[in-house]
Length: 607
Image (cartoon, rainbow, N blue to C red; front, side, top):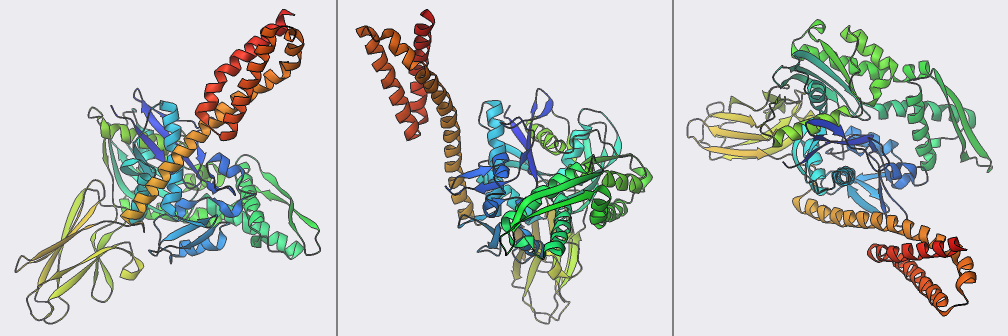
C-alpha cells in the first residue's frame, strides 16, 4: 500500500508523521528532533537553509531569514495582517504582481507558497530518509479558520515541493483524530488549539465506530504565540528606550536577538516564576559605546502583557459553543493542542471557561501531524473504518444590490452540501446579472473575501423584480465550491467552479516546481558529499600522522618506497576529489584510503 505522510505545516515549527503497522508515529529529523523550525534562510553564498540550521544563523543573517511565513500565506497585499508583518518583521516583504505577498531574500523575490514549499520539502526529505524510499503523497493540515485562498496557497506549496496533497485537513480535526484513534469512545470534545501563529477551536462528536463529526469551528488566523512574543519585545524595547533613548527596532540584528530572547523567556516562564533577559552588546550608542539589555521578566508581567490575547481566545470559544448550540456541561472533554497551551495562565483560563480540567494527554506539538497521518492512511486503505465529517469554517454567498452579502451556505455547515436561493433582477429591462461569489461573516460584501465571479446573460427584458434567478451553491468533500445561476423562465444557465487563488499562476507554480527540484538534487548531493568528505578527511589525517614512522621503518627496501609513493598518490587523488566537491569520486577514494590506513597501522604495530 502506498505510503502517505501527514504534515503539520506550523507557523513556528513543522512536524511529519506516518502510520506504521497500524500505529501513527512522528518521524524525527537528522538531529533527532521531532519538530523542525519553519524557518528558511539564504546565505551570502546563495545557499538555502531550512529548519534548525536556518534558525541557528538567524541573528547574524536576520534580513535573509524568514520565520512565520504561514501568517502571510494566501493573503492579499493590502490586508491589515500583511501591513502588520511589514512593520514588524526583520525580513523584507513586498507587493507581488497579483496583489499577493512576496519575500525578498538576497535581492531575489520569493512567493509565500514557495517559502512554505521549502519547509514541506524538508519534511518530505526527513520522511524519505526514515523510510528509505520516495514519498509523493501527503495530507497537510491548515488552521480550521483558513479561507479558501489560504487553503489553495497551502496546496500550491505542496505541489511546488513535489508532493501530491491528497487532502487538506483542519488542525483541530487532525488533533481529534489522533486523540480518538483506536480508543472506541463516544464523546463530545472541544479541541482548543493555540499555536505559534493561529488560534482555532473546534467542537466535535466522536462516535464509537470511527465517526468524527465536527459540529462547529471558529478561530483567528492572526493570533498566536508570535503575538505573545511581540508583547514581550514591545516591553523590552520600551524599557530600553526609556533608559537609553534608542529604538532597538531600527536595527534588524537587534530585533532578531530580541525575538529569540522573547520566545526563550516565554517558554521558560511556563515552568519558572521569573527569568532574566540578558542581551550584552545589543547596540552601540552614538558615542560608540556598547549598550547592554538586562531585564527580569516575571510570569505575572507576562500574563498582564498577554491577558487580552488569552481573553480573545475565550471569547471565540464562547461564540463557538453558541454556534454549536451546546452548553459547557455538554462538552465532555477539552483537549489542549499547540505550544502556547503549555502556558499555565492559558490552562487556567480554559479550565475556568469550560468548568473542567483540560486533557493534557496528547502531545501539543505532535498530535496534529499524527492526525494527518491517520487521515492519510484512511484515504488509501479501504479497510480503515473511519468517517470524517467536517464543516465550512466560513459562510458562502453572493453580493446583492446595495453591496450586501447574501448568505447561501451558513458557517459550520457539514460538507458535502448544496443550497439554493431565488433572486430577482434589480433594474428594469436588465438582460444580464453578475454573480459575485464571496466567503466571510460580514453583512457588508466588501468586508468579505471574493472567491470568483461570472455573468448570466441573455435574460428577457422585463420590469425589475420580474425575472427570477435561481442560484445554487454546492461544496464537495474536498471543499471545492461550484455555483450555478439559472433563469427560471427560460432555463438559461451559467455556472462556475470556484477555484481559490494563492496569487500564483499555473506557469509560476510549474517554474517554482522545477527550481525546487534542482534545489533538492543539490541538497541531497551536498549532504552526500559532506558525509564522504568527513570520512575521507579523517582517514587522510590518520595516514599523515603515521607517515613519518612508516617511512622510517620501510624506507630501506624498494617495496617499502613503492608502497609509500602509492599511498601519497591515493591521498593526493582524494584531496583533488574533495577540491572538486565530487561525492562519487571521494567515495571511490575512501576504499584506497582505508586499505592504506590499515597497512600503515599494521607496519607500525609490527615494530
